[in-house]
Length: 174
Picture (cartoon, one colour):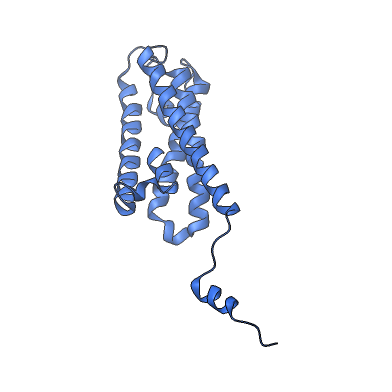
């Protein structure tokens, strides 16, 4: 998400450049999705809770371990999958639809954060708390930066193109 916000904030134009940023953003999104899928599969080997395949893939199907928070994480995963797949159908669905789908990333992130906080066994650990604070704080900063930039750009008058400036400087012969 930080890479995506960096691209929309135009920070990526400085380094590594827009095409590289887009490619990295797409790759990291798919890599993260693969790790989330791996996280789910690893739970099949957890002998403490004994998840079934249905409980792993069906939201809110777990009964023995924090079903609400696990289900929220599962729905977040499916939203992530939709957002990631939208990369490949962007030309078919159009820019506006793609953008709306991409806004779901914020919902997905919050769901993943809540899932980690309330169902993660390591959540009370200092390193996990630091991760949540740094991750959430960074994204909040980038989002606020994006909103401020967007509002500022809309409120700042744009200079007229040279052709219009020159023609408006000519006296009118009316």
